[in-house]
Image (cartoon, rainbow, N blue to C red; front, side, top):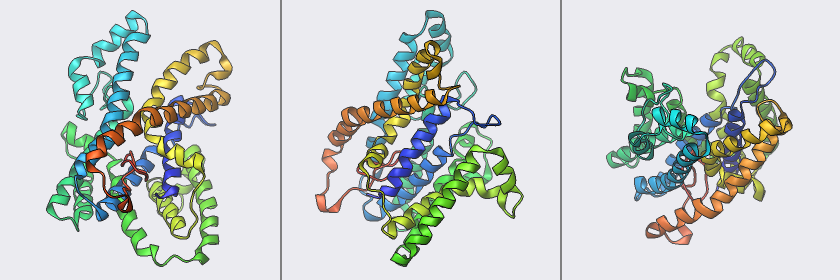
Length: 361
């Protein structure tokens, strides 16, 4: 388990929750701290990493890891939307979003344009899962062509798709800007492989300093338009927003090589539960929004206290879902594919992290 990626995975999920509270920084900045981009870079890295050791049943393992808890969350969101609101609201929502065809497409990871004009499934955050499954499929096909060069074949296919920008609605969705972050994750793997054996204990202090400085710049770039404008004035500064997430993952990997590793149980559990957090937080926020109407201090759109309360509540629910639903489901469904304990299974990531379940993210 790479604890540093677990930490980043958990923080990325919290960043997405923060984004969906709709809380604004000074100047009206509405940021997810590039949480989804971080997920995709980690996913690009992890799929490359785990496939080098064992690519058996690759696609089956990915589906088992991603799909069951996503189906549970989608169905829960579906029924809560229909049952929890007034009749008028429910009918209006049903008319453009909740028909049977859309539900089936959502459960099968088929992208489609909803009534709001967005390429989103019933569970809105599921659009990232649609991209994730597409990435897995390309990687699976590449593995059939060449196990050794599968990551590079996948990289080439994704990069060409991103560069060409097909006019088709479906291919246009798959070729969006986030597709490139899978490519960055693949490159991060090869960069880490090159540096891993070269990292010594003498790197520890410089890496700690770099982590503090980089973290400060990362937060500033995400939460301040002034910081972005300032960065754009330096040579190649316009590319910084693209490079910050892969740089963060590379720094975390180098720190791992230098034995600067996250081991605190809280962060590891947060990383484990990050997929559940990502999938369930909209349901939690939906319920908390009604509470905020009665208690203004808990209104997460306007109160930082409300934001903190929402983050804690969403995390508690996610940890419960992980231990009670996600992990048992995963263990049950992967029983036929279990390998000897000494071989391990580093496929844990939804959007990409590292512990015994998958990729994703």
